Amino acid sequence: MLIKNINGVEEKACGCESPLIHWGKYSGQSPSLCPVSECLNTLEVGAQVQKENPKDKGWYIIPLCLKHNAMTGDSLPVNDKIELVSVKVRKACGPRTS
Image 1: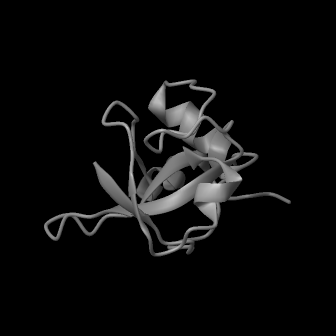
Image 2: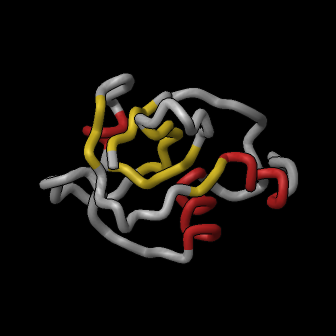
């Protein structure tokens, strides 16, 4: 699947400690490596992305390494087994308290 890092904030941050923790909470996955094809870097951030699919304009969170998180606007091929978590799920977390 192809995604683009949009590096934006669609809505206020949730009560989770970080976007990466938020992703893990709702994806049920716990990989240690970046899901970008042929990348062996460790996960460091939860990135906001969109699928490269004109029919799906949703915003999602996926884990990425710092190198790929910095590649805003570039097409990134990611493993099809990685779960994309909608940023809309943030409403279920409650507001950030700090």
